[in-house]
Length: 244
Image (cartoon, rainbow, N blue to C red; front, side, top):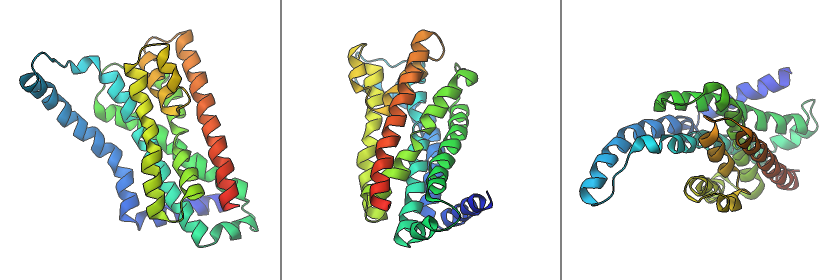
């Protein structure tokens, strides 16, 4: 247990020395504030310059919120991915494999920490966004599901990237899966479920249903957890092949 605590403390020190990683921790909140400022202005300007189009933001707040809560897990995953790349390049992972801290425990920490932090980010960002109609209790399963996206970066970047620059470039491409949120919102049922192989689809879909919980909400949660776990399992396999 002390080894795991020492690893976490060392992570904090390493992140605090890297301005880019610190920026990634702040970006989710900056994005929320920016949206709060920009969206009302856009809602007023668009009808003026595009005749026939009126935007009622209240109709889309749930979707916007479902998109917002996906930002933090992806960025937290990038931060952890950077740490793992550094530790891989410095042969720290090789040392861990023969130390009392097993590699399985190391991977577990790398998956668990960003996932837990993501849950906290979810509630903080929803509070900052000022969404009037949301159920904190029913959002918890969605926040936990969204947190399962955080390990994507932590596993994907070290598995496929040779260095941080390449890792960031690859993850920008990988983060395109967030487009599934728009499919979940715009494309009608049942056709939208063709995007169900992408984890972000289920986060948005479940969030849109969470105010009217029923069997649909439950099935969306089950589907979402299944897809997230499938992605983590696949990325974990690639991670172990590359890192050892």
